[in-house]
Length: 192
Image (tube, rainbow, N blue to C red; front, side, top):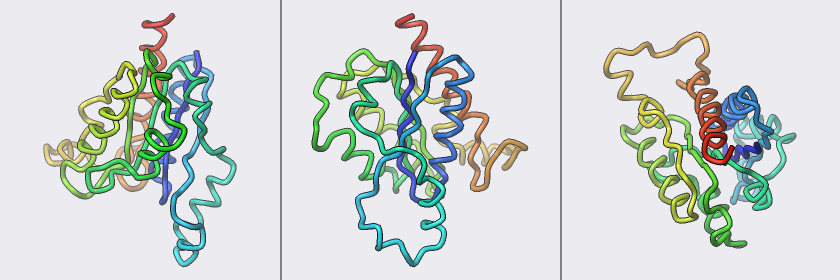
């Protein structure tokens, strides 16, 4: 089975989650394409930010996503920062912009993930927006686990803030790998 993990990341948090999702799908026996979505802003806009420049250099070896990657895949995982409760404009444009996919994704299994947001509910809203966009394309959605929908709620209930396999910024890489494994397994059950 083929799994495409496609993400947009400006600061590197979503990229770290995407790598973990890809790792989980590989652990479940999938062939994986890890792809990033190009930014919409001109490159020189970010030259003053050392953090963004370092992320861009770290991700330079990750190929840019093309619609052919979606067509190649049996299962798709899409990642975005939680931009005030919306998916990134870059991901929105990739899914719904030029080179419209029409019904080409119908029947494929897909899931979504995004990096945490300090705004309560923003991550959940961004994930819902991505799911709605995917449903429009006719995919079968493998929903993220409830804890992935809004990790700030888990923190308020007294769950530990950082575990041994959690990256800076509250990124739960164990959950991301689990998402990749579940996505590959669900695709195998549906189409295997």
